[in-house]
Image 1: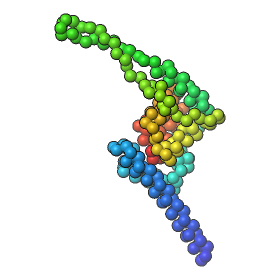
Image 2: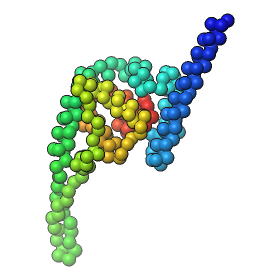
Image 3: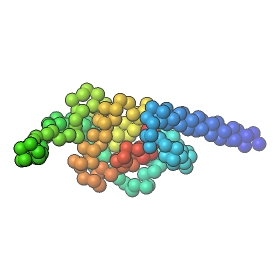
Image 4: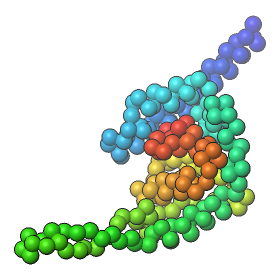
Length: 207
């Protein structure tokens, strides 16, 4: 009888702890919603979806949930790129920013009513790295030997715990992920969609 009571007490303790963790995550969602009115990823509908997943797996930790949901995505997280050093890809992204950030110009023609003729004009085209010159347009540099998968999961955890940070930091993260998607085979980097879908509404954790 005592064993049964002890087991029930342990279950109650685990449920209380789990509900406390859910409350903390929910509070983070609400604060982000207050700071970013109309930000769809923290809507009530998205919260309910993430909450149901956490209850389904009895897990609030992003790494644990990733592991528990891997069956949905086959062996994608074990791809060569996923297990490659994140530092090399980070450096390639920073190098690409310098090239992609060079201003581009386009020629257009405007009709001049006074002269009755067309005149040529030149204008700058916006680039994907418009803000790259700002020091805040960056993500924390990965440590040596950390894999790309573990690095991206760490970035997701930091957002889960502390929010998106400065808008330029969020832009930099999107730029980094887009760089990976564009420069590596889709089947090698499909695991990213499990963590950071293209709409950046975090696949398995609140943001």
